[in-house]
Image 1 (cartoon, one colour):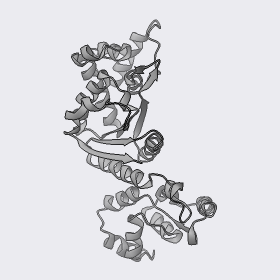
Image 2: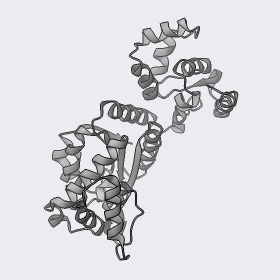
Image 3: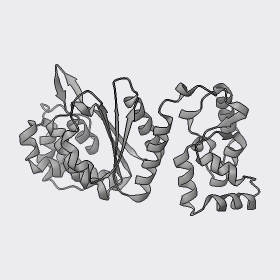
Image 4: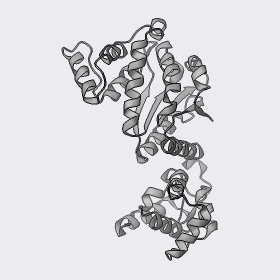
Length: 311
């Protein structure tokens, strides 16, 4: 049910953005997902709207699903047909005044990522999305926007970054492990943290043998020996699979060009293992910042992969 308050809010937003004739851009992936979820073609949707006295032409539907601005009344009728709010359909990131392309940077890439997220959710299979570009190209902003879109689609999102401290790379693996365990990032010197891990694994229904793997992930190992240790890889795979069983999972890692061998070894193992799970990996690289992704070449060839080069 679309309330008068919701109508008022979106009308105010449209007016504030200076859109022509009260037009609005719709979320392409969301709109197509709703239609395909009912097993309808665009023609069938138009006919069904007519049967419900929601006048909506085939041309308007095609325009909406192509990402072009549509009249507010078109958005309202689509929302009424699918029994959602208009806010659920509007792609706020691409609402912009005519000729102001900079108001929605990388809107096309964001819409395409949204479609990929929807596809992963519906198919139950994993995929990889890479973003490459020079510093300041908008990779981090696009990662954050895609995480917001994923949450709106029911995803659980874990957002990570490979940081640098005094020229040494800080691994995102401890943060990823704690996030999947639903535990705060731990102080390894704290008494009792091993018992906390064991208790959390028991709650998740995972075997106690993964305690050792969690400890390895949280304390870290040098790059080369790490890649030869099966315990942490198996543990992280089990945690990812468990999380994805509950709902689709998005795992994003920014500044991947800084990644060390431990991180690349992890992805080389986990990406192919994600094929049977609704897990979407999003990785961002500075084009000239390093070669942190070189170690996952084999894994990249085994998963559905999309690459964006941002300018």
